[in-house]
Length: 140
Ligand code: GDP
Image 1 (cartoon, rainbow, N blue to C red):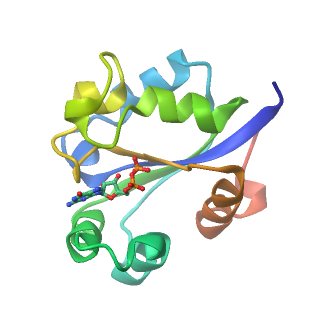
Image 2: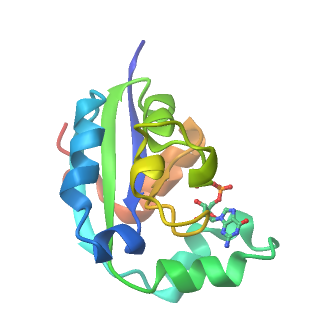
Image 3: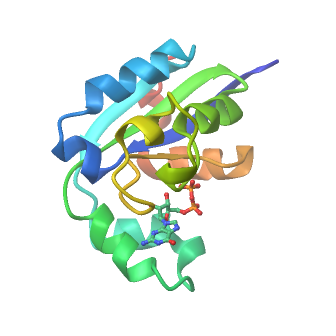
């Protein structure tokens, strides 16, 4: 399997509870390398653009409010089959449906405050990485 990169966000519910290190440990235990990472407080415009595909969904406003409610940690992860590997470590969107040992099962508070984001496809990973990071910030 080829080396691949994916984009990750440690969401406000997790940074608020000081869980960045614990989540990073699960990421690294899964064989993924954190090749870029920074803590930011997203603006409303950034959150609306980032979640633009969900603009028509009923929860869009709440989701944006949540994403700007506190700092987040944006990351680029690298590894074999990184996109699928990270989705597996994250667990299902709703923590009630997530498998034991996944980040969302262990840490998420709700379907919205679910601790992490991970890209769902190579095309979205590329766009999401480029939205938050300059090429020189990725150190693989
Ligand atoms: P993901 O790829 O597993 O993050 O899930 P989606 O792309 O479907 O949804 C994006 C994000 O929107 C999720 O991670 C949640 O934070 C939020 N979300 C998804 N479904 C719901 C919902 O039914 N209600 C609310 N309030 N938020 C949701």
